Image 1: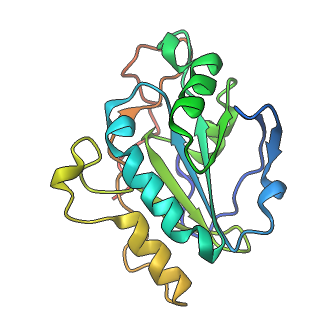
Image 2: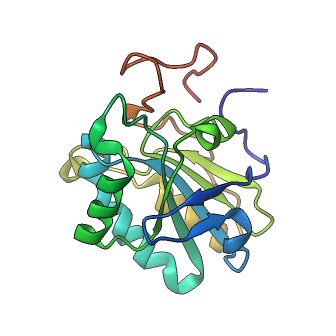
Length: 193
């Protein structure tokens, strides 16, 4: 099996604490016809650069039942500002329209094969993967965006069509793995396209 979930794979379950004081499992989002799970963090310039574009996408598709779930799997020992208290602070400050979950063990990041922050996964009602990769083609400087791959995949799916580009390479900082140098990637991790 490849490191990252392949198109058509089922969404792995999780049970994680959120910044709102609750815990969430995959089944807590059963009512959503489409679920976007994305791996993110507090410090990455690619995340910070594209947060408002992600917010706009989440708000645009919210009336159509699309739910967004952010997961931070970064090691706090690599980047202390990626710890849970900073997550709570970030949500309080920015009030993003998604739940923000903490994957301290990094088990969920491994199950999904998260490569970078941000890395998006779009699942249909049956929770089969229909798109994975980047949100936009220039997350660090959104003034230079030429394509919003995430929005295109959502629009196509909601129109009853398959994603015309189901896989792109995520663009961002690599996930900060516990006990590893900041730029380490698992040897089996590779570009998706």
